[in-house]
Image 1 (cartoon, rainbow, N blue to C red):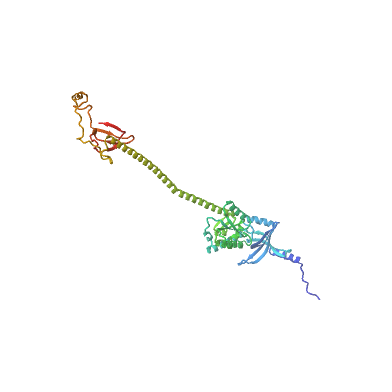
Image 2: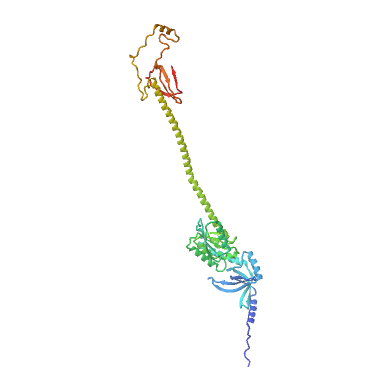
Length: 443
């Protein structure tokens, strides 16, 4: 009796070999799109990663392992670098692959032979435009830029990878300035897997910090254009735009501008540029304070200088007045001495003339009591008549009345003069005038 035909039995190696042949024949060369995850490079030069597909809820719906052998890996890196790209985490790529089955691992894998750089750039640009449109419709493009950056930003929040080159460049520039900056670091991955969530979380931490911060610096080192993909994401851009503190970005790319740069308060090209901007702001404020100090001193000195000039002029006026007072006092002294000498001279000639206060009236001899002069003898008369200068009868020389004596009194260095008219006999009024040195004359 014949039984059923015996079914073939495969060893594992045989089945894997047949499976490998079928896969290679069915998928010899195909284009595949997906997002790079878990990228890692081996010491031998090969690159290993996962190529995944996500749904609208950011969940993984499919996944395949992928490998780029050393020779193709070097060629692909050169091609991408010409377009400012490089293989990176979360980068969506379109690549030509062949399907392979690896028996020792028991898994299917894609062997990447070529990567399309145009697809990657186009996809990034399309996502970029969509993100910008969403931010614009939500009024977030200029929100952070409208905040006021303090004139003296000394308390700084810093978001970057701890101990990275960007961190050291930023901090060393601040330290060399000599100003009292205080930096509060929140570590966050700035590229690769999980970078979006860490950056957004760090911005929320600094926004709600109890420490009064002046601004936040978001920085990273240099890299390819594709490395900026995390800063083009909507999650990071919205976190930057909604931050209640001014955000300064230095993402290390000289040419391209990320969406985070567009919504930030002050975008810079590199971390060093951010720190230099902060230092220059304090230098400018220091210069303004110095100018205010000089202006204050100038405005304070001007009225003091005017007061000093006024006081000097007043002092000069007082000294001139004192000199005039001394001159007038000297003149008064001279007049007093003149009056004293005048009084003494009047006493010698018969008293003060009427009109001088305090002067006593001159003593007059009554006419009746005056003794008549003796009559001259005939001889005397005869002789006198023959003498030259005789006028008629009388004595020689002829006697002149006392009242005809006029004396001009003027002490040395004085300009006062007292004159009596002839024949006044002391009854005239004294006239005080100004004249030259003392002189006596008989008219």
